[in-house]
Length: 368
Image (cartoon, rainbow, N blue to C red):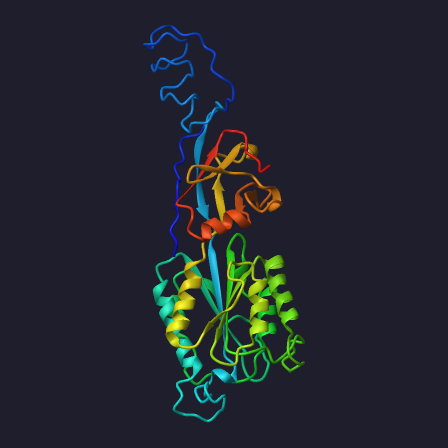
């Protein structure tokens, strides 16, 4: 998983006074130079580093800057795993026929891949959750998630995976996704300020439609699946990845989900064996980097118009409500959390940023 260093130095700020004007005090000649400031470098800028200002960042504005702490918001990853009948051990991928007891089955392969991923990322700060579809026969989906997201439960998830012969029923993919529009279905998964990601693993195509009453109402169209994915993003902030597993996947349906998932993976990933599935799960999990951060303001009365954010020393402009899609914005009225907008977020998730810093004390630089 990509590592980003976050500067979290927070000095004593009690009684801290902001000044954005030059210091015009007259000199007393005791600083070793001939100007009227208190430095000794022989210039007239009022500092001792020769950069032309009285702070340490090399800009020309003179104001008291203080490093403040940034902490990433929690990241939650819900794996939504297909458990339809075609995942059964007796379903033969090559012949697309049943009653093949020699076939290890897609679920037994997926089960081992999930155990691998839970072990691989056990030390990362990702809150894993797990859900299945269908939950029972036919097109049923439960009104309770199999396992809501939580830290350090990877071993518990591995220990409680259904056995190799569990799959049965049809494929209510649309309805399984719709469950997550309800914030009470998996409360920790979508709780603010967590950044929720849904990872769909399916071996086929929706066969149950959009009625979501436990019975079949036809097949959900790519447009309907794309819309439910877009709704999850707009209403719950859920970004969605898609893996298609084995022969028989519906490319149009899965791509419609991927295209509307709000990630850089706008096409679904096709896998055909355990190694490919493990690689895809690992790649997608590794790509998750938080784009929301808690900003530790000096105190509750601190002026939110005196905050600036930097990527590797370069300023990232304030982008109100992400209108331009390139900077950062506040996500709450108390000015506690910020979100990096599309372009800035993409840089983080692509591993292009090594160090994020935040400073308080100078007027916020706004995206033009």
